[in-house]
Image 1 (tube, rainbow, N blue to C red):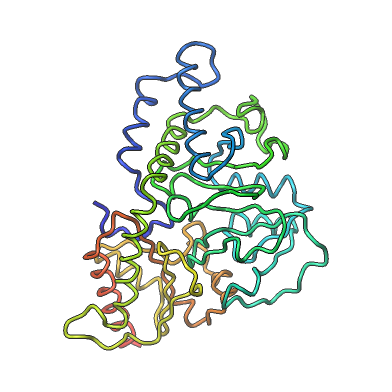
Image 2: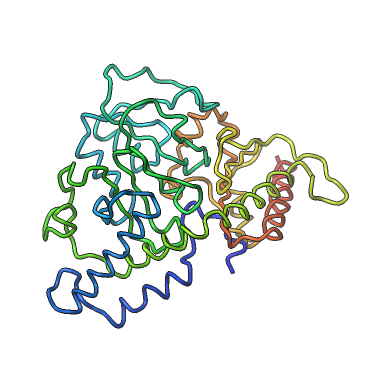
Length: 368
């Protein structure tokens, strides 16, 4: 199931165990979690259980530090809008931070020099910020920006592409955001972690749900689903990671001909973007002399699902600012695709994907 789905950085399949946990909250227990009757009480108990599961996944000291949102995009917008005059943000952030920062006039910074291949084209901001936004795993390249790449200070960390995939602990971070659908939970549900709950004013007002911090009727089935996905991830992250690391090795080595018999020559004129410290789950691969969109269409016709980059900005025809920041030449940016793995992919399907990419790229270059 889903062996040929290689777009897991856009969204992951929902784990069947998550679906099973959610179903009763659609069919058996219709109560609003803020109603006083026993159906409402059951729903609120389920919500609080899920809050504790998410807190455990990220190593939060207290479940009260978790506020449920519609996803990481909302949570990122919430923090940035509340504290815009105190922030600077990394130039390689997800669009929900990068575009919001541009709208609010928040300055950008380049992560420290320990991260290879980043090319600065802007001056350092004229002030010392109180807060920085710097994601944990880049959604386009898989580059890991952990504590080794952070200068001292307070941070908002978008951990969306890290949760359930690499070990993570909130430590002394001020704010952390995440989305369930990136770790095999349902779409439309996420969270904001606040080191000090109530440290920012509400972004959405109304009925005063979530202790007055985020109004709106709680999406109990989705919250339960995220909690279950978090619980599964706590127990299975290392096992999944070992499997995906092997898939990553097979995929990358295939372009050097290492897994073919007889051995094929290296493909040539391609690059893997994002430096050496990358998540095994995401590969940004660029080919000279082709259009990435054409490659993706042919892969889709062959039954493989990949993407050009961030699904949130896949309709944008401008070159990726993230890839430009990593110093990828324009002729390679045009030929970029993103392959993102999960434990549902197999060694066989991974090798088949690499083989199909080699075939299509060679054909397209011959047609130049």
